[in-house]
Structure formats: structure tokens, C-alpha cells
Amino acid sequence: MKTGCKDAIEYMELSGRKVISEFHGGQITTDAGGLLLREIEQARGFIKEFSKCFSDYRDHEAIEHTVEELLSQRIYGIALGYEDLNDHDQLRIDPLLAVLCKKKDPTGQDRRSKNEKGKALAGKSTLNRLELTPADAGKESRYKKIVYQGEKIERFFVDAFLRSHKEKLERIVLDLDATEDPIHGSQEGRFFHGYYGGYCYLPLYIFCDDYLLCAKLT
Image (cartoon, rainbow, N blue to C red; front, side, top):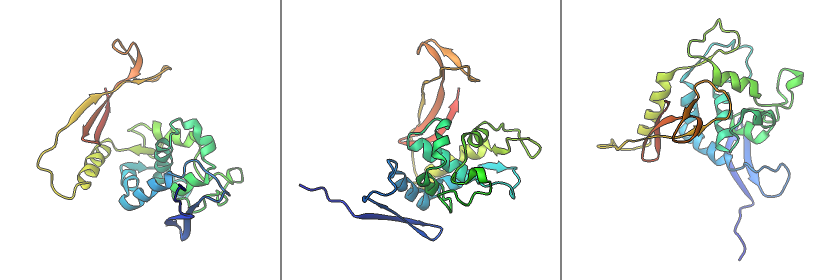
């Protein structure tokens, strides 16, 4: 019995261009499932709302990657199995990931610097600065100027949970669970856990059913 496949699948447009996946060769990717995640984001706007939890003190006339684009690159990368920032040395030239991040030119030919031509997305160093910017950074900081707002992030998870229900919930059940995250270096905040027999982080997660409401390092 033959498998029934469509010749092409059309998705939401990108800056007036059609986004279509086909099975005829050409530009081939193993991460086409990311386009389905993009459809969810286009409809629900989770990453767009999440980006509002950050204060951007960079010179807006000089930047080429918005906070939303940087967060999209990191979040989609993790969702597709690329957890290591070093992966983005190659991913930054991936036109599919650039489409997911809403880059107008997924080929990166519109970059200002000659050395950056063909690299539509941010490199690992830029993403590293995003993740390691301290909460007290500001306009006078030299490199790290995208500051997370902890209270807004905590509220974001709760608001996303509430928006997912059409009717007001009369009762919810919370599940609190700490999960071992083993580490193999001298990262700040590590500690030896006797039960697991090694160094780790021990983040505390608060769930309601399948919804993550809060995540804290303990």
C-alpha cells in the first residue's frame, strides 16, 4: 500500500513570500518539523510575548538581530535538538532556521558586514551574551545589554497557562518536582548531590498537568 503524501505543504507567508515544503529534492533539511512549530507561534505568539520580558539597552540603529529573533533562534534550536550554543556556528547559515526566526532574507545576503554575508542569524557569542547578561546590567554595560525581567518571566508562564483555557478554572492541582541536571565542569552554582552521586544543578519545576508554570534553580 502506497503512503499518501502531498506534493507540497504551504505555510504562513514570510514578508510576502510563500513558505512551501516539497519532497522533490533541492534544498533539503532534516528539521522541517520546525515549520509546524512556526505555525503554532504565528497563531499564538508565545515567543513574541516572551520577548517583552526583556529590556534591550542596545543601540537600535546598530543591531541586526532583535530580542525576539535571538530568543526565537535559541528556542527553536533547543526544540529541534540543538542544545549547545556551539551548534549555532553552523545553524546561523541555515535558511530554515532563519525562516522560523522571521528573517526577511533567510539567505543572509542583506547583512551589513561583508564578513557576515550569508549568515542570516546570530553567532554563538551573541547568544551567549543574551543568556549571561546579569539582572543589574544597563545602558552603561559594555557588551551585555539585553536584561531579563525575572518577575515578568514568571508571570509569562502563568499567563500562557491561563490563556490556554477558554473557561475559568475552578480548581488546579500543582505538581512540584526537582530534577537532576548533571554538569561536568566548574559552572557557577554547581553542587555535589549525594543521592545522584555527582555534581549537578537541581532545578525545581512547578507543573499543572502538562503546563510548566515555574522553573527555579535550587
